[in-house]
Image (cartoon, rainbow, N blue to C red):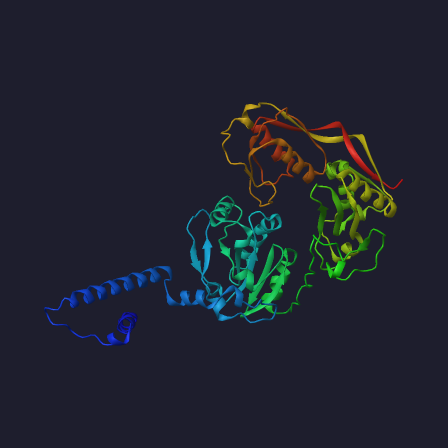
Length: 478
């Protein structure tokens, strides 16, 4: 049919060639027209073949052609999913494979689908993947979790494939990559972001906190109805907070330069407005904790881990972060603060914040020494942790909590000690004398001190608990 259409088109190039006429055998025109026609038919066949290879079936081609980014209307909870989206060809990558395959959401239809928008560099996304995989296995008959890595993350398909390959012991996921359309249908400002699809509708849009067994059971038994999450409040860090609606309508101010309570829906940010000569004229914190304000104002707090931070106040709730951060806690302990002033250097800017903190909270900050129990790392055989090819890619899964052994490749000691100090919440002292990068393999559960000690011992290092005089920072209300 396509060939006949081309023949017809060739006949209609102009009115005097509307019909083909056979020429006499001795006519010189016949070979020219004949070879022109053959060339046209051959070109058409090649084009059709190329399109057939690009789109294995016409439905896939129609799926691409029928959706343009500009024509997409975002979907919300309760909306019906259009058939064009179900049949949209999507690029999927598997662990360790360079080539992508084509899938459709329709391939997962019939079960509850959770679209998990993520990136390899997003710490909360990565930390939640083991839990997502556990839920996928537990509810395999009723649930499909589909990872979506959008083009805006700047992850390549190769990066995603390499990332998943290195974590196959913890979870086995595939991921949609280089997505531009799904993000248009389900717009979001931050990741991780989860979209729940069931019975041809959008049934929930949640963050990672609300991904659990109870909520899955509710959705699978249809006993719970979702409501849209609070609308995101637009905020531009380049403009003063609350000026002309930037960040929403301001609540009652608590301080002259100004301090306000927590505002639901406003994201947590810290912003410095710098001029061309790198001086500072405005400092803004939105929905931030008191301890973060103090960490900015006092460099000695910023440089100290919580293991070396002593909180000596009557009510420490505002200076510590609970394991589970509830809306009630946020309402009582988060603040919005902004100070605007003539441009000055970093030292003077921090002093302005210090003065405001002293006026409102009244805490004192002191640096002193304290005799404390510590974990002390020493060298038994310095060659073992340092004897490796220095061209080895610098890479680690130290911060992912994936439940698999930790690889620590071509990194110096300090980041590892800081993380161990954070996990154990007691000081870690480096007495190895090693300043060059190391290569280590550590147990999955770093909190198992016995296994950690055995692992380090096999790699020429010792970890013992001893008493040391440690420099600490004290926040006090006395």
